[in-house]
Length: 377
Image (cartoon, rainbow, N blue to C red):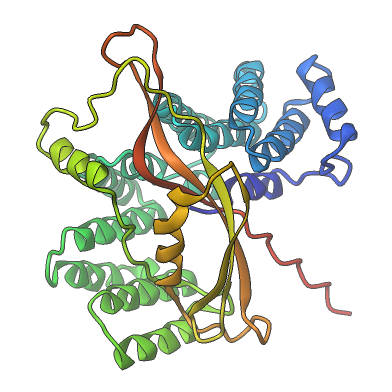
């Protein structure tokens, strides 16, 4: 997952006096909460303060800030659709990590609704959110619904002449087919996508090449993986691209739960009224070396006790990225936030919904974007 909240702040062109993590930011956001700001400045200050809370592990505080900000600006959608949509997107991200999947679904739907209702179809913000609903279903583990959503988006976009949105949805469908292990079907889908006129644009041409190489790397081994990593590095630019991503090891209960869930059987966990999961999170830093291997993996900070993070650390160790030609000599340093996946359930013997661990991780890229180079001359 991308660094959502930092990306939203850049999208909203936050002025320098807002990006402060001290009392000045708190005061600026409080003024907006009292109705003293434009919708744009409210979104800037609220998202910035929510990110500070989120990075510190205060998920519920961040969620409350964003929920209040979205509600406060609901009637300003037509005036500042990008700002209001950014509040919903940040709210969705925090809700997913906090375990509230209902709020996550609602926030994603609101984000897409605002952009579609108040911006032209060819606007970059609308294009970037074109596949958000399908992405939501993937996050919720409903791959059949995700595929149906992407297919519908692709068909409507093609009929409306929105070739870029159709291409994005088509590429998402390739990954779903690849997850189903459909032999050569994903490659045939890429062949068809490459025949579209928009595929000749530099961005999509490179993205399709990367997609093809990543598919090839799934079954490659040894020297073949190394060759593909070098080739992908040449196609993907200076920043390393994740090429090989091993699955996370699952504990026995989680594995059984997922099998049962796929067949609509009873929960293995049999959650009782006394069960309650706190939020477990950790920031992991690691180097991606020039050859695409990961090294020096360490937990930088997080909630107490880190035994639950071992499968994640092992997974990072097994990743392979593309060879990076434009980074520093030692490679690229990355930081990712891992949150133990949970969701709200009403267990037996209770009428109160509460957070229950469900196994797995939500992951958010916290890597700081490199500074833009100064203009020439």
